[in-house]
Image (cartoon, rainbow, N blue to C red):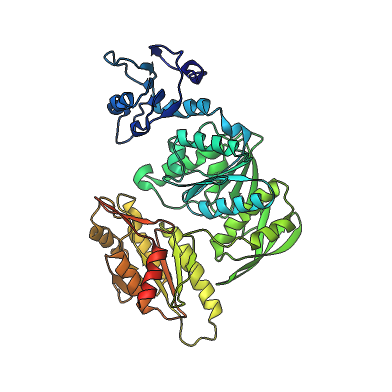
Length: 493
């Protein structure tokens, strides 16, 4: 694509150098720069792209987007703009020919439930010949292509690149997790969402957003940008829903399990084998079963059903589709093991998510063991990530102490922090009676302790890392998968 075409409808101060040159790639990462490429010298929180401009030129870049002109640079066209970050999405949209215009776009935001909900929606749409791309925290699925996710929501350039690939693969729908970071950084710019979904809101990412109000307002941006033709699907059991949709132009569709809504569930019965509930929609009541367990998964299922109804899929067909959706990796995932123990892996890394998953297991466990004289135990192995919101650490302890019988505090992804200091912050949240608290800094040893303590009736829940296959320390990232480690320990005992 010619540079002048790439810059169509983009505001710039001036261009130094020829603009009738061919551009074959775009990037804001100098390590990915290539011959005849355009390099966007974007300023980030911890870096300045201008410092990597020489590296991009050495790799063959022929043009650069900059906010300061450098007269000493030769053999490269410089496009001077006010703010390199603000036009990144526009450049990418032009280069990849605005692929979202050819897709039906579904965006999901909220603290918890985004991943399971996105897979549920993709499952339903795929089952009804509506082939769907998925961008989320585990992976990006673009037809037969699957890419391990580095970010819940990719950067602006990769979003447009992946959407172009989805279009080229003849997909017609997009289901996308939209994180608060992405909304604050406007990574989703130029995607006109047909449906925006709000799951729930609780404390998370305050290390980045500084306070809950900023976090809430970041989420709100998704709904503020919707057109009159779009639809907001919102959980009205979360008190924050009114704030998020108060300025939207879109139509509103509500769901609930605690009150009447456009779509709501009643007669809910939980067990470790799944959940039964009655779906209420337009004066019709349909009995549903899902293999997923727990209250929060009913919310996820209702959200997916709401999308199906919006797309005119018959509720009776949705009932069949839901039965065959089993689980998502690292989301209350049961681990098959040689000792036949009840071992679950879950990504819960916020106080609210941890409380929900523990409450779910406790409720199901109690209902299945009414006749059992010896009460089964819930053993929770958890930690907290380093370089992240420290305020939630003692709150995680309170959730674990309240809803589990034994808490084993260990390391998560310490990153640049001292693992023991993170554990100390967590332990402050436990009450003075710490008889059911075990501290083991080594995550593998902590999991082994849990397995040795458990009998066949007990439940072990290992939380915080979910689908992740690594553990991040200050100077090294190691392979570490909670599911694989659990199986290995069971095999060795």
